[in-house]
Image (cartoon, rainbow, N blue to C red):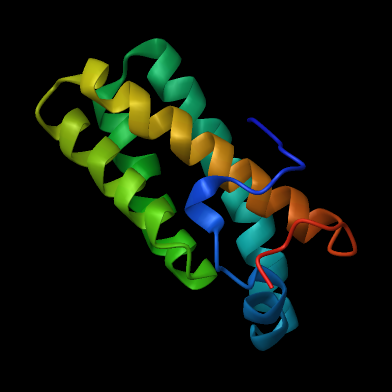
Length: 120
């Protein structure tokens, strides 16, 4: 999983801190732990070339990431899912890379919310 300190372009204008503050604490904690887990599962499924597992992880990430209000995450997860459904994991490479970068940044911010680089 890629973790970044700098703000990915997809997160410009996103106030992740405010979004996280508005989530009930148990939801934020669950989002963090499940998000990390599902991102690892997606990575492993992509490495194995397991389209069914890619679809499962991407579907879960699309649902989870909607809570973060970073539209690109949902879009990337949907693109990964659609590519895996077609059996074309090559077409999933770019959205998978971007999802990893953006989700890595968001998870890093969740882990250490006092860092600079938030969208607001």
